Amino acid sequence: MIVVGLLLAGGRSSRFGSEKAVFKLQGGLAMMDAPLNALRSACVRVAVSARVGGGAEARARRLDLPILVDDPAHPEGPLAGILAGLEWAAAVGADWLVTAPCDAPTVKDRLVKDLIAEVIKGAPAAVAVSGSNWEPLLAAWPVRTARLHLTTLLHQGTHPSVKTVLAELGALPVTGHDGVNVNRPSDLTSLT
Image (cartoon, rainbow, N blue to C red):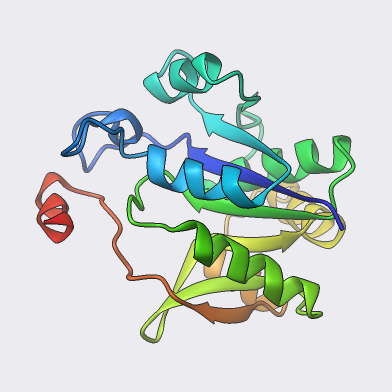
């Protein structure tokens, strides 16, 4: 079984006010570094979904990582980035794609490995949970099945919630995430 990873860093960061993927946290690390490192520790290859000309793209280039850009024909949203990741995963011969959002700076490699372990045991897909809340951008996607499903949805011009799509794929919950997600500068207080 071949598992690759995708860091989702292609959003507009409109609520944050600047590109949050490359926002410097205490200690000098960019917000995207912890989830990226978690993916790199558990996946054979990792790509970055990024906006053209953005800081996440530049950082990925410096790390010599593949950069994926959303198809402009698809509705805007995270599923467009995930579909680009699934297409890349299929092209490199992967069976599974693990996604992580750039704005979850507390993601640990243990959680990524737990998502992979769940699909190795036979889960049709897996999603991180914190308490009773799904964290749908932190998930393991079956490349062939999810690619077909998302292609159909996005070509129809629809962009349902990521949680809805994971539920349709039969994703099983995996505990171990603290739920930290930075959307606004005020969310940074949860990191201290």
